[in-house]
Image 1 (cartoon, helix red, strand yellow):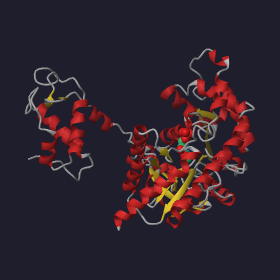
Image 2: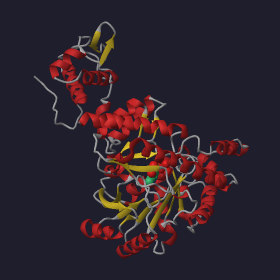
Image 3: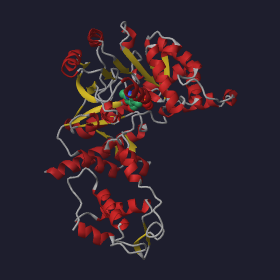
Image 4: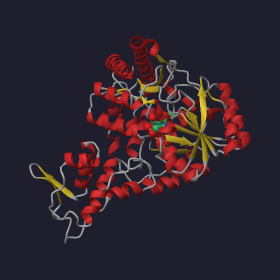
Length: 481
Ligand SMILES: Cc1ncc(COP(=O)(O)O)c(C=O)c1O
């Protein structure tokens, strides 16, 4: 008798759905015939009933079977038998593309947040509504300026926004540039995507920080890129490690997030910045500097970016409105040599004809408006006060069971849990109690870390959120004893 293969990478429910679909298509179960009940089939195959529920749901979504309360699950009348099959096997298509799905933990987090809107959210790496410039953006958007004609625009980006960014980059990041060296993207994420798709090829090796936000992006693996680790200590990555990786693996590029790194919060020290640029110019190795968090530096004096001292033209600089204004605007930018910008703008044209002009106008107006600077000042203060609440409650609730460095900017706290725990179990216990965070392994780390984002949750939820986390952690640890 057929049994699912427990060692296969394909989920059990999918194997069962495929098997039943095959038997139905061979005529073993004719149209309208009754299928075994979920409980019976689960017993026969030695799986949980929930696995059969999922398998039947998959077949129902394909139109292969129908369930009616009281009359059980039957093979569809209309799809089978004499009538030709009409429903494509979407599952095979879905599995067939080369773009890999998100990591299971990230899919679980998204699902949990969708199912329960009142979860205390230490997982989403963004600003909460209470500290976003909602009123400012509303004020800008209510101006009649927005009734202008909306046509296809330059895929490189809306010119007034690129002009505003020239001033912004010079004022806030000490980066002198011109409109023609800027590409507007749909967030930093799209800059990373364009780089992997257009400037790298399958098989290329790149170096990324460990731990790193980039581990959470199967996008690199989808593009066939091999990732190598650069350990991060309190001063960031060690530039000598870049040289070693170059010698060993001929890395083609280095991706770093040097300012308030996600997830560790670390800032690459000015000495190491200089050393890194020296190594990169010696080897002719490009550096992608992903810099979304620097303007959140709580004391208002961010470390200048690598790009500001990049005399060799080695750095592709990436910025975004997401962590300083609103992630939903989807406005990001890249500063790069013109040949690179032109190549990537051409790719943009093929992908989506460029970002919608509407958020680009909002971003340009916000950057130029007298509302921007006071917003930044308020933002820094409020994120810092959320950080303080998190730090105090972690110490109070968990004491020696956790250790962390206190970040001086950014939205995240990278927290080590002393006794190692089962990551999935802890996450599920937290979700049950109404709180969520990101398990450390998402960032390529061992399972004894978690990332708490403190900018997203409301201030009043931070203390109860950590109490729930502590309760879940104690429960999971007690299990082990
Ligand atoms: C280091 C880093 N880079 C890029 C991104 C993507 O941001 P966005 O596309 O919203 O600008 C994030 C988001 O969390 C991030 O943490």
